Length: 241
Image (tube, rainbow, N blue to C red):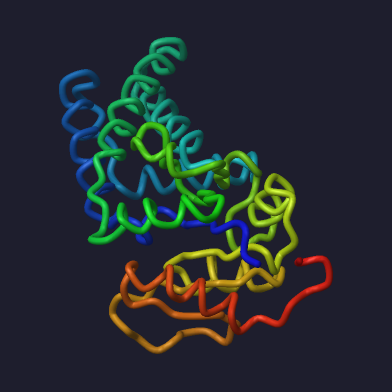
């Protein structure tokens, strides 16, 4: 019955917090070498102000984390006296440094085995609010498609990304299951369209919001059995045979 399984990426298949901290550290070191006064003259509050200003000018950019970060870099560099063309060049180079480090992830235990198991039986999709690139990560052999908040113009839990997946895969909501760690962005967002959901909950905590969910998985290795259980328990739908 389930034909498509979609995955959130960051904090579902790997930990992202340490990755981002490292990427930001490496980028600051790059700025020290190539834009020597930037780190001394701008602090966290300045970057927050730039982000707010950019989002106020164009609300769509708030959903595109790559475009937002690159534009923040550009404006930060311009603000300390660099001309626009040079600021654009440096911002692009700095973003590539950041993005390279951002893709130095370590998959959670069992994640690769899970993808190996599932992609044989289901079509897999990646749905992310971030900017992880499954091809750059070497995971494209498992995933049939991928959508990001930047590509659809809205961040989960907005239904746009889930609808994009349903339309791309040409399936009904009950033929799709979404796997994610965030109870609102992933679980509430997908469940609002009638999509089956599996909440990745490695710490075994209580469900924190009043949103429907189908199942909870404390280990990624449990997900294949959970999908089979959903298919067993779900009543047959018209046209499903």
